[in-house]
Image (cartoon, rainbow, N blue to C red; front, side):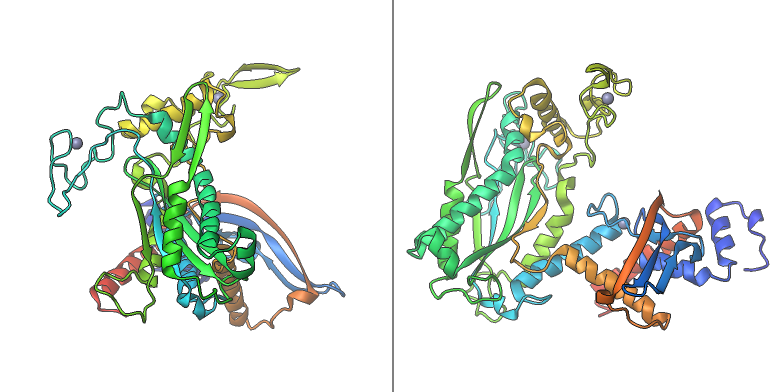
Length: 487
Ligand SMILES: [Zn+2]
Ligand SMILES: [Zn+2]
Ligand SMILES: [Zn+2]
């Protein structure tokens, strides 16, 4: 390779890669890109970090990005969304899988005995806001046509969209999404009450005997409405490490879950919509999560691994299934207000959005009609009325009103994503230390002084080719693993 003059190579990417490949430190550049596991848009940082002895202030270690081959450090973007970064979203899915799995089967600091606790997997859906195109089946599973008269294919774009958009309750639909988090919170309160009631205790007494732990993910249905998948577990008084009382059975938990879901409602009022009651949909699925060693009673057992797999999959899907856009729609300059303060309490029309408050007209968004109408309803309810100011609907219009987190869990469910990421980072730092033959550092007797600056996002052209090679290799490995050639 050394006898090619990079300047004579026509492609910018190849030229840049050849220039990199001719450097003495090319292997370090390769390793740095490999570590990012194929991240689409890594963050470039410059800066330094110094570790000092806390008492003598002697410099124990100094790292500066000036010592890197290209004078900067690449860090994976860490984005959860598969549309933004497939590689980092896979890492996120894997981390989510491990933390959900730990809460079901133990591990990562949670004892193995949690698998003997009563556990259910439940799905809380949204109610109907008007008839939609669907693929109905009879009780025996025989398909019959949609109300529009057609048999829709499973991937038909009309599925989940209203039969009659003019009469569909769009305000109700986006307000449901906006209150989904609050409905969930209310559901957990009722659930604790129902568990206590079934055990013949008061809610205050329950806390001394039993704790209800959760992990949940939100997912958009085709009709653009949020629904939740949740794992609910009964523990002893101090969470997963303590044995639940003997009365805590899967049947008691299933019954309490059904009862609480049926009772949950929130009443909202506004001049523009009158009074509305928001509840879960009638479709309620509660299934016991079986222990791997439990004997099957003929029904398909729902195992720890299967549930953790579902949750991890939903956690990265987020809003993508609905085909909505992945960024807010308001103008960032005027924050959607359409006007900018000019001092002395005066304002002028925002020049970027011409006073509309929108980054681009809603009519120009590259989305299906039903999603557009959900977005428009959020915008209109939030900007034309003061009824729902606290919901900040314009800001969450791209999420069709939903402003909650896609995956959450109660504190005692299992480990946290932050902890898993920290472990991975520590592991990498530790590997680097061993590689360089440096002594271990005691965090109690040292001080760390750091200064980091954001430089840019992305790779340079040569690194981009290396990153693509990493992605290709990973895809090939996955394919082989699926085909059973690799373990
Ligand atoms: Zn990434
Ligand atoms: Zn139809
Ligand atoms: Zn503006």
